[in-house]
Image (tube, rainbow, N blue to C red):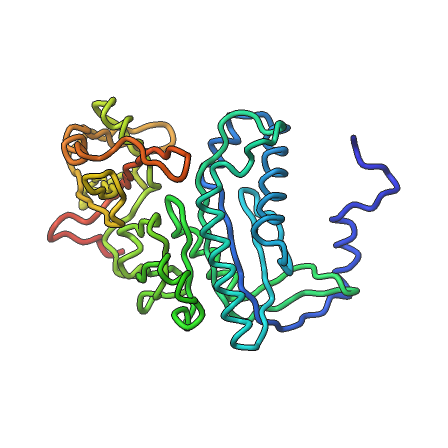
Length: 344
């Protein structure tokens, strides 16, 4: 049903409130959520179905995992959730630990979050990436209504969300070890990452869940890296064993001084098919490069990959659900040994 003409729409109300808006400083935890694979899902379904899917996801995420959020807004393929925090150290620690617990539980349950909703049709995305950061933010308020939040911690949370791939939670705080209680601390691994525009002089300490695979590009200073990486591709172990070769989109056309390749990364399992929390990796720099209308694609043989993953299970079980084991492929262009990019 279309909106009635005399009913004021949200954007109209926002336009009215903006001229009288005031800025207030506050202490917040910023949480960015991104639905992995949403773009692919959206291209395969009708807009009507996609709208009902997002309605279902947003409702269940907010009701079940962030019921006390101070503010939230859709970001197209995810959500921004803001929690204003107490300045009392005991309450602060309790709230942050609770939020981290909820985020971990949400990531685990996300593949089935719309189960039972008859309005959601077709296979829905199964993975979610979450970035969390704490700090001072500015709240924009008009007539007692919060219009938006801005601040460095929101920008950082968005960048951390991008690092939470293929799925999982990435958290940064200068006092992270003091803010996490003992129970939630065991769910995180300490690591570091270089983040463009935020930590370009030294790597940023982060805490991540085991499912997060920090890319090679994020382990090098952004201003010194000799690598340019493309978007990662995730193939199931079953797909790798079925295929003989596969093409990956390079970040750009390789220059004469560059070598193209593909970085391969896969999880490690013990003899009982349990994830050890470790990953193995290697590179492939032999393949055929083809020029396509909108990109350059490097086709590589998967025979070496098949040999490397011969002992990997095709799927693992979480509670009552089966999850396909994935292999990560990241195409790149790098400077050839002894060669540098020509000076302009």
